[in-house]
View (cartoon, rainbow, N blue to C red):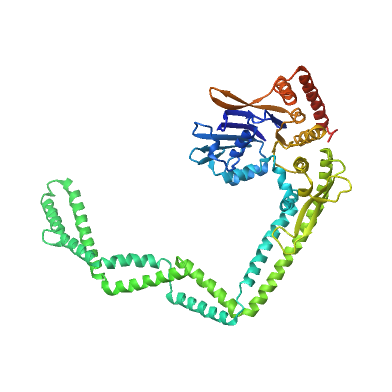
Length: 566
């Protein structure tokens, strides 16, 4: 669950720290007080695209930090995949947005990118805003919604279908790309043979180009090298050279060696040096004698390097790539040389791949329809609990004409809100307020199966009141039995059901505006419910009404959580 939200320098928020409860958390406040600002800060930490305009005036950065505890297996696995330690069953995600537009994301102290944050938080939290229900009007998303409710067998089938469709598409594309004109095929065969022959005649070797470049460097500077070697040999063995000087030094010490036994070590060392100088001299003379005729060999090396360069330009950036190109040409040549049998094999492979994909798609379709039948009944029950009387809800399926990576199914949610009316697409029937409740009904069904711990609902109560508002409050309370729920609302019925009630207020002081978020005690809750019911300064009668709503909510909550009012 989301146990703590820390926000600093975000829009009108100077700094706030919010500790959240595990069940139903409610945020209320005057219109424009800054409830949406708080949600924006949460979205910042979750990796959403955010303009640097949200940085509080006069500040260098905005910061949002979310602490999740009891994270669950899926979120832990997503974190561990990124190398993040979650041994304490906690994830802390922070994001600092700078005035230059850059942002710094940290997950448990490790610097990450926003995409990494999203991959983890997708397993931790869902946010349903005022317009979230619009996804229900997009029929392309209906199948996705159903698939989220499927079990492990369906997941296995979906993976198989995606893999098989990929193979089917590859074979189909290869067939479509074949050249059926015999004359053009013959020209391509000639080209392939010529390229293969050109590569094989070159007899390229790994590391050859590097060795040739090193040799060319020597050949191109052979005169300078020969001159330098000759000079060095002269310094070693010319008159008064190093060898003569060493011999003189050895003789000088030899004359007094018997007089001081300590000089023996110097004589030995000088003798070793003299011997090594002689060896070096012979090696340099041998190297001089082995120097090639630079002009002829230089031409050979240049020609070979030019050949390698041309082949790299035409066929690949390395010897390995050139030979890979050659092997691909050989495979292509073999296929074109036996064109009819090759086409026959491809058509057979296409039929086999298509049959496998179709078979698994049909199996998946059955699972989807079986799941949809259960979902339909559960969603109908949830809609009735949200004050949709005598509603009819169906999940319609149609079959795609062609194979698809998602299977053969198209799905659409259909509804009739009044008896006698035919089932129609959601987008053609429901108003905005109705769509919010339908979305809540769908979500309440999903909540029984989903592993995501935290659900945020942002003013999904727009456009409802009275009995319907109470039904929505009851449903949120029921969802909060199994999930942490954070709800931003203007309705007293929902606010009264809170396990933790926070009030968002905006104040102006010293020519500066600030937003603060405070948890309310019992007295504060009654005053806030009174404000929602009757305005800024609620009367005694309004406060009494607020107390009645709160007491009624406590009784309803007890019934819901004891299983009597599901």
